[in-house]
Image (cartoon, rainbow, N blue to C red; front, side):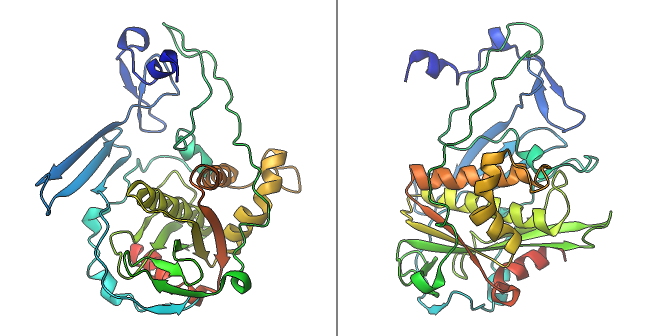
Length: 343
């Protein structure tokens, strides 16, 4: 890495300035010298640092009335029990709810007056870990005048690998004896994550969407649910995509914590999600995210974002991602979590 590359990650106040302003449309803080920038403050705290009972937390702050995220840093837990079941079976998670503390995973708070827009616009500023954006020239004074369009992630993965094959891989899953994650019997280095989305009054102006992410009965600190934030369309389809983004966030936490995963199975009852990321995405990636009528794919930016994150996992970490389509009654744990968020 050249010295120039290293310097690009250090903010230079003499060049870029330190004056900020609140963007009235998106509710975030930006540099006066760059209208497409965003300023985010982060911090971490650890109680009883260095001790066996240490517990760490984090905070992310963008603007007083915009996105605030906080939570407890994931810590692997000791095993509780071992059980085996079919991948399509559902379990009673009433014992899980009373252990779940919503204060540990507060929902993101965004400005309520934001108008509805394509789901991808909210992801525009998110960068995929491991990728460095294409360089852009920023003037010393005045507003930014131009941005180099970043190149798409090269994709060479066979198109047939993302549809989970029950006949080939089997449908039996069990709680790993060390981690208590749901794993395939045929692959002890795999993990099964169930996702779903719900929407009350779907299609109306009063619609409200929620999501549920289920990892395990014994890893309740990784199970997540909540309301889909306002910038995302309040539909069941966008809720499914938002849940999948959250599932990949969980996966990212596990990889950073040291988990060595060879295969991730995203279990869903949404054919829209499963076919979109397993079959249609290959054509969309080659034609500029257009449908058969030549119009932009609905939620196209979200599909592109998820596709790039999956490719990154496959290429950089050697983690295969596949999508298993099941009936709704076979995805009850995630569905219960999504319903609980609407109560």
